[in-house]
Amino acid sequence: MSDAKWVRLLEALVGIRSLFEFCKVKLVWDESTRDMWIPSSSSFGFSYYRSSMEGMISGTPRGFYKYKEVEWIELSVEGENAESIVLKLKAIGNFELERSDKGIKLYAYR
Image (cartoon, rainbow, N blue to C red):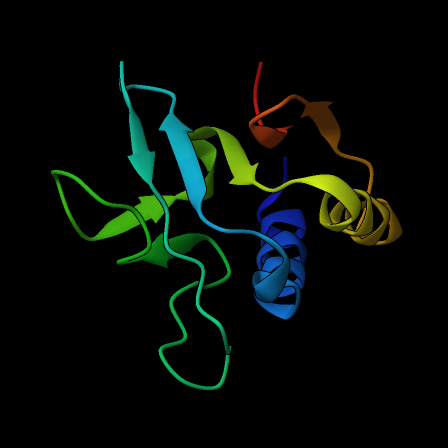
C-alpha cells in the first residue's frame, strides 16, 4: 500500500473513530500484535505524516514507524458499525478486508 493511501486511510479512521472500540496492528517484523492509537481528531495530536506515523503504536521501540512496516490493522467493531466502516473504506480506496467476529482486518501486505 502506498504512503499516500495510508494517509487517506488514517484520515478516514480518524473521521470514523467513534464506530470502533480499539485497534490492533501487526508489524511485518514483529511476532506479536500491538495496540494502535487512532486519534479522535486530526487537529490535535496529529500523529501521522506523509511517510510514517509517530506515537500511534504501543510497545518497544517507541517512536516513528514507516507505513511499509505495517502488515495489517484490525478494528474491533460489531454489527451495523462494521458495515459503515467497510463502506467508508471502500469509498476511499481498494483495500483487502477480512471480516470476523473480532471485527475488520485490513491488510497492507500479505
